[in-house]
Image (cartoon, rainbow, N blue to C red; front, side):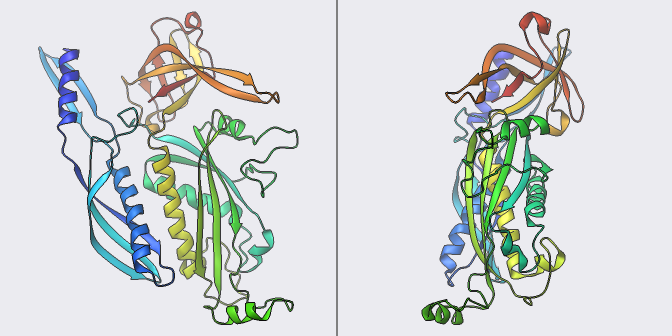
Length: 396
């Protein structure tokens, strides 16, 4: 019967038509180049469409009076074709559009599936490389408020569970980030942060530039040609440049990074102390540019982690039961199965501790689920299999 069910699922998945998805995208218009903005907005919308289609073929089977009952939901992820722009508008120099695209189900992740679990990320504080740039507009709270807004944007996407840890700082040396080192010579403390927060991934960033593009009061030594260039430019333009880094929370390895480099109009009085994240800030053109960038960051993060494995810590063992630090909020259900991986600490040539996960060839089946944790059962007692706290389970 299991063979029959598996064969039916395979045939159903192979015969699935492309899914027709509608999604939105935005891009800032530079130098009145509508075509360039349309291309970038369309690329963002395609990412959004792919995320909407991303899930796993899952079934809940039961046997009643000799009859097999199967509740089947089928979704997949892939690439888009036949992309049509069905609406488009320009407001405040930002182009917004809606596309309709076919998402092919035959081009999944490398392992052929996308697991259905919500991965957890911890978002640390984002340091401002040049703090004096925050004086204009009194944006001194940007280092903590911006990542908090990013947490909200990621959670609104709904594909990842983001937690704010904006009181934490990752980089002691901003200029060399993300390859900076701590005072003791070790690399950044991302693995420790991931373990302390109980998250699978850690997101950090450095705000590289929020300066005026053409200062209203340039220094006296500014060359005449620079003054003329400034005089001919739109008044009050301001940069927004940020580097985003995504780490594996178990090993501390940097797995993705993105740079966002935008320009917005600081269309308010020079002495107006708006503060970052205030209602007055979001009403500015510059605030709208930042909001659009935050949305792009949340989409990129979700898209980056879509095909990554789901990992949860084992925080307790009792008999043949193990307790995981992820539950219903992560999408875990009774009957789900995971593989157990043992955690080892190894040392590199500089004697820095590194984390290694090895497949223990042990399966665990979930028997109880709570919002923030789950209980799984092993075939025999955990001590016999040498399954311990801080080992992990993984779903690919």
